[in-house]
Image (cartoon, helix red, strand yellow):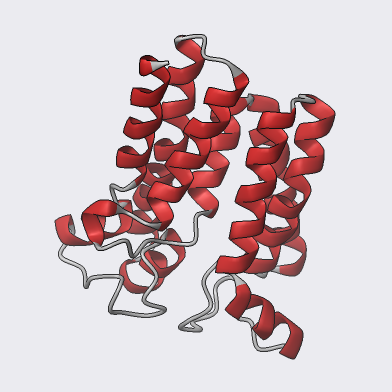
Length: 202
């Protein structure tokens, strides 16, 4: 029980390490919380710092979700602890204790959690995102579709109520965090991948 609690706490603290802010500081770029969409995530870093900075941010955000789940698996924790660990890492990214609880929208960290939970789940969600992004070229809609389908994919791949519940919560929060994107999608104002449209992050 103590081990599981420590893993969950560590997952939250690791999630609280903002890859976007750290990468921008190390590369001499503006604080992503004050530039572009003001969102500390890979899409905004791409906008203000280019592909290299964005790629590093994306990997860092994904690892924050992946590593805690791999540790939880390695310690052979039960599915309830796996679910709590994944949710803690995700919430750490959204509400980082080290950065005034102002975090990103969570797509990359959620994907890291999915890969750490079960590689087939992560691969399925990533494949849907890539397919949607290639066809419609709207990052936010690609993320919403892939994460909206994630609970059903998990139910199909690993029918466990704790894990499905975790994924449902993550997906609902992701939709809430993307509410401005959803409004823009409904009005046709959402930017497309590759277009310089401040404020429209995935």
